[in-house]
Length: 96
Image 1 (cartoon, rainbow, N blue to C red):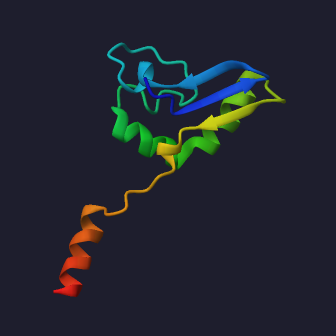
Image 2 (cartoon, one colour):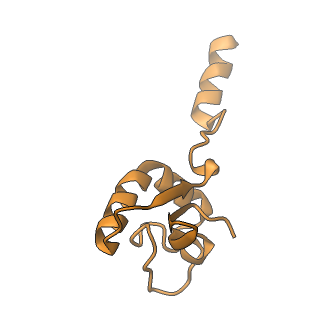
């Protein structure tokens, strides 16, 4: 179960977004993403996390009254695809 984003106060995890959210089949979501990754699948959830993690962290900290916390974001959320299909096709056409 891959954790996409997690918030800690000291050594205690106080919130996260993981497969319980992005692979969810039920309607209720109360994790860091605010429901944006809920049931979205891993690929879309990684994209969402990449694009919105900073705003989610600010909002989560505000809602929970956190002033002293650390956050971890999955490295996969920051990795870009080396060869996106569109870019790969463009490179092939330019070299051919």
